[in-house]
Length: 245
Image (cartoon, rainbow, N blue to C red; front, side, top):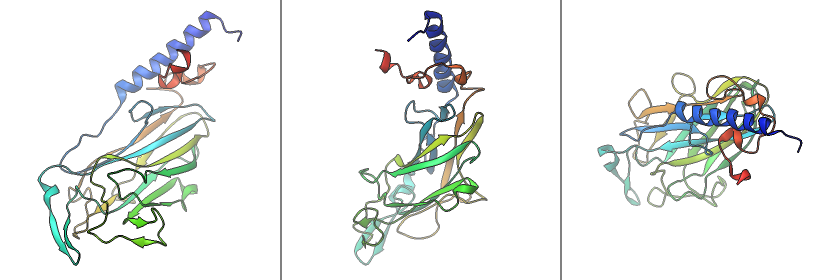
């Protein structure tokens, strides 16, 4: 390979610094009585991505329904009694903002096999040039995700009632620098969630949403010091040494 031990040690040192600082700077939503939404890096569980131009990363959207007394809401429907409240989400609109000069949207994947999710979400990709994409949950369809199929009634619907990721977005890093991937909230393109039992929909303004955490993508600076100086990157920049074991 032609690499000296000094070069290898330099790469390891830089990468270790990146992994440690990313862990120290990480944010994490705290489950509570209201809904939490978070963008996170599944590789290390933080809200920070250390990436170089040309890299592709997966940003996961994590949703935590409410906990506590509000989860016991019930209401009547023609099919019987159904669960309501912010712990039993039946509809959602999530808009995610990014800097198109730094990141290019690549692809997306719904978590349709998640046991806790009516995750028949539809992607909204008509504003990518403005740095915005969306995910909309509007029921539980058969076949899964096919809005031309059959919509389940409230008594048969698989609600979003457990914490987990609901959709992930792949981005390609276009240029050096730092930017954020942000779940947009009020007043612009507000997050919104609702249950089967009707209004009010859950939002930040009415206390239905209590944490909204963005992720940072950086090729240098705090949390990702000197990532661009690494000569080779086989998982080192994310603290993954499995390729060298």
